[in-house]
Image (tube, rainbow, N blue to C red; front, side, top):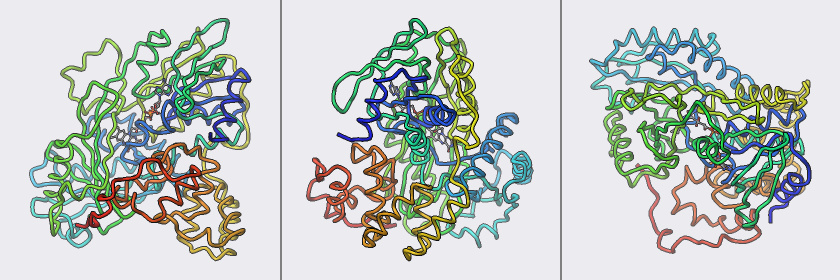
Length: 531
Ligand SMILES: Cc1cc2nc3c(=O)[nH]c(=O)nc-3n(C[C@H](O)[C@H](O)[C@H](O)COP(=O)(O)OP(=O)(O)OC[C@H]3O[C@@H](n4cnc5c(N)ncnc54)[C@H](O)[C@@H]3O)c2cc1C
C-alpha cells in the first residue's frame, strides 16, 4: 500500500470536495493545480497512472504551431506562441528554446523564400522572444548538419521553438505535485465508473484498480478531463455536448542518437507533412505519423515504423541505414481533435483540422468538459478551469504565489550553493533542479546524510532521487517509474534495462521488493544496439 495514495483516498472520501477532476493528463492536472493554488478542495483521479495516456505520447514540443500558418490559422498561431512564451518564462529549466533545422527539397510545394518569410512571420508572432530565423543554403546545411542528405535539397531554414527538457509526462506530474503540496488529493489507478448530480452535489462512484474496491466521493463540481475518453465519460454521466472528439493517431520511434547537433531536424516527409528528429538524451525521437483512427487507444503498426524508418533513411546520409533492430522504444497516441457533433469530417483534409481546445460548460450540473487542446496551451486551460468553477459558486481566492512555474531564482541559487557544498557535479545539480524543482532540496538532504546516495544508480539517476521519488511520487508500478517519472524506458533498450545490475535495488527502493516479472534470461544476451 502506498501511504501517500492511501492518505489521499482517506481525505477524498471524508470531506465534500469543491471539485472532482476526472483524468490526470495535462488538462486535468493543470485544472487541479490551478484550483488547488486558488484555495479549492480538489481531488484529481486517473484510471491509469498520471499522464499515462495522450500526455505521455506527444512530440515533447511547446510550440507555436508554425505548420498551422500554411492553413492561415493566424489566431491559433498567435495564441499558441503567446502560450509557448508564457511556458518558457515560467519554466526556464523545463521548457527550453531549441533550434529547428528544416530542409526543403527541390520542387517543394512552396519556394524556400516563402518558407523563410513564413518563419520570419512566425518569429514576429512569437513577439521576437526567441532567436530570429535564418535562411540556410545547401552548403550551410552540409557544414552544420553533415548527416543530412543534401542531394535532393534546395536549401533550408532555421527557426526556434521550445521543448520539454525531461518529458511531457514528467512535466504533467509537476502539476500533480502542486496538488499534493496543497494537501489536496491526486489518486492514480482510480476510475470514475458512475456519478449522479442531485441537490447541488455530485456523488461519484470510483473503482480502485489497486485494491479492487469501490469508494464514493462527493463534490460540488466536476471536470471531465478524460482526453480521448471524454465522450465516453459524458455518455456515462448522461451529459449532452455540442462537441465530440475525432482521433488522429501519431506514432514516434526512438533510436540511438542519429545526429550530432542539439537541433531538431525537420523535414517534409514523403506525404508532405512536417517530420521531426528530436534529440532525447542519448537518443533521437523520430515522428510523427498522422492517421485517422476510430478508437481511443492506438498501437504503432509495422507500417508506421516502416514509414518512419524509410523517411529517416531517405532524409539522412547514415553509414548504415536504420532498421527495426535499432528501435529502442515506440510512442503512440491519439490526438483528441474537437469538432462540432454535426460536423461531417468524412472528406475533410484530415491534417488541417484545428488543434484548438473547446470547453463545454453545463452550469445546471456544475460541470464542464475539456475537449482537444495541446500541452503548449496548458496554463490557459488551468486559468479557464478556475474561472468556470468560480462561476459555479465555488469560492476561490487570488494569491500572490502563482499556481504554476518553477521556484524563484533565489531558491534555485540557494539549492545550487547547497549542492556545491556537497561537491555535486554541475551537470547533476542542473539535472536535479530540472527534474524536481525545489523538491530537489530533499535529495540534497539524503546526500548530506549519506554522500554515496549521490552516485548514479540507474543511468544518471542516483539513489537519493530514486528514494525521493518512492516517497513522494506515488509510483505503484514499474512502468510509472521507467516510462513517466523518468524516461528510462524510452532511452534504454528493454533487454539492457531489465538486465541492469541496479534493477533489483531500484525495485527494492520503489516497492520494497524485486519486480514479480523478470525478463527471460536470453534477453540479457542481446548485444548492445548501435548504428
Ligand atoms: C503523437 C502526438 C504528438 C503530440 N505532440 C504535441 C506537442 O509536441 N506539443 C503539444 O503541445 N501537444 C502535442 N500533442 C497533443 C497533446 O499531447 C494532447 O493534446 C494532450 O496530451 C491531451 O491531454 P489530456 O489531458 O486532454 O488527455 P490525456 O493525456 O489523454 O488524459 C486523459 C486522462 O483521463 C483518464 N481517464 C479517462 N477516463 C477516465 C475515467 N473514467 N476515470 C478516471 N480517469 C479517466 C485517462 O486515463 C487519461 O490519463 C500531441 C499529441 C499526440 C497524440
